[in-house]
Image 1 (cartoon, rainbow, N blue to C red):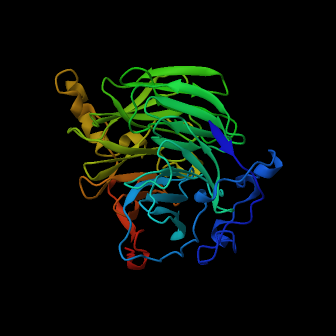
Image 2 (image 1 turned 30 degrees about the vertical axis):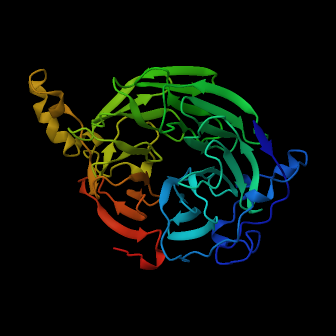
Image 3 (image 1 turned 90 degrees about the vertical axis):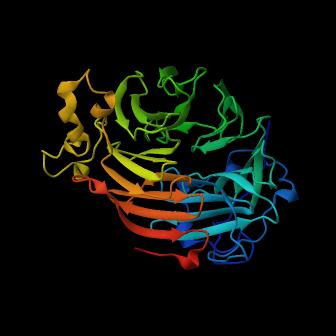
Length: 423
């Protein structure tokens, strides 16, 4: 069931203003025409959402109450230029480069458990969460920040585990279902049954000329890939154990997967289902929190509960830009330590464990073990962005030739902007 209201939308609000969300636009967050959804020109006028869905006045960046809120969820937008933080009293939107809080919306005593952005668009998907959810946890609220209110909602009749947005689709992950909705009229287009999926695992491509969706299959360790443009479905038996994390490239042609063991990461071709590469995070069992491809699919970043972020070199891409290719032809992806050093054991293949023939990460960054972090590649060359549920924001840089420990470029506590630290 879905409801939608439509009306004209004023510009994005200025986060420095404490007046209503419809006043003065924020120059850093003005969406272009391709990122602004004009529902009024596409659909008939409908009644506005109930008043209880209307936002209070925006709080200015840097404003802090007596105690910082509890972060329930963090997520990057589609191009990793921004990120959102869902808290037990609302949500906040931040810019990554340069780091800055763009705006926040706080609800009196109500929590948001999940926020999904659409690039820098005014439309945001919200799901209630925390001890006192502001919205029902089994509904997806479509928030228009131009109007400062919800203009529609989706009711999948099950607890919402996650939400993903494309310019043309809204994807909702429930415990054992994936639901695909049309963005403009919120009509349900496709429903997929899955293996139990408490984390709401799902991934979608973001290129306009192709729509690829990946989700758990019906069996343990299986990935289902829908190529909607080709009207083709592919099942991939990725692991023997339960799938705990996966990620698609922007074009949806590659998928990286991890199981509940968390030791090996596998990269598959989504069209044929072929295993292209396997890399090793470590020898001990770990929970993988996030996987992220670089924009050219040359690198893969991994975060886990072990407290180390790894960057792996990939050999499977076919679209590396010239400027990102190594200057020295001898510095190929397979020639970087420690992966190369492990190859000295190849003559003992069949004698020594597979562990010694594994491909290891090129670069690492150490964090607090046990804390929850997600990772993405930054817009600056050879940089990664790390977000933590503890409010931490790191920008790090890795050496693509020599590898080793990454250099920390920045650190901020996004819950306390005034106490930020830059390294």
